[in-house]
Length: 276
Ligand SMILES: [Zn+2]
Image 1 (cartoon, rainbow, N blue to C red):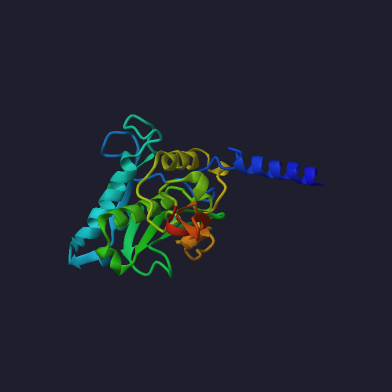
Image 2 (image 1 turned 120 degrees about the vertical axis):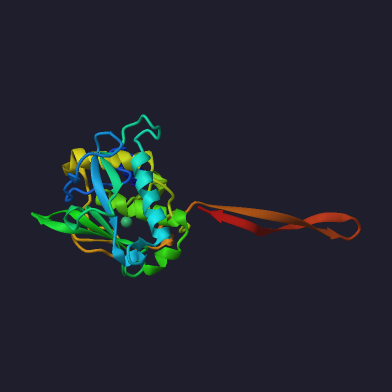
């Protein structure tokens, strides 16, 4: 019986470690229609131009967008536009180019950044448009809270890049943090830090979704801070991950001294611990 259990355990472990199980890091959305964009990218790359517009709800005064939000959206666009599957400039990029489109007509906006309530526990929320047949698509709305105007630029870029990732078909990777590692689609590290920037694996997953979304496993709306294809749910908390911890101990030896000294016992005490 014990042998049978061991074999079963080994099979489960092999399945868990199988590349076919964890080939998508992050997962992608099968119910999301790839965007056709609005013309060609201005960089001549042949990519589809996506119009990203910051709503007037983020205006400091009429016609003037809050500069912090402006810079955060700019940096998030640049993050995606420069990312490739290999991490080198000559590598395969996504099929999309996120363009600044403040002057675009409302009907031409693919992604609108608005101030609002992103939902309890969410840094931001991405909302899709129902295209029928169980599919969603553009235009998308990314909702940021009023306090986003006060966020640091790194946090703004990371959060907006993450939400842009949802608009081009990417799901979350948080369930698989230990195997996916750093991707813009992790909500954060196990310690709660915001994941920094778009990674080559994010670009690979976006291209997979663009080319063959039927092979994707998730649906838009299944994850936190997304609505439009099944409803959102609350942001998972960092302790949902199983962290790897290191504990540092120090030791003090005690001696019993009477007619000479002999070792008695050792006391260990925790000096530090670090989990990631
Ligand atoms: Zn998300």
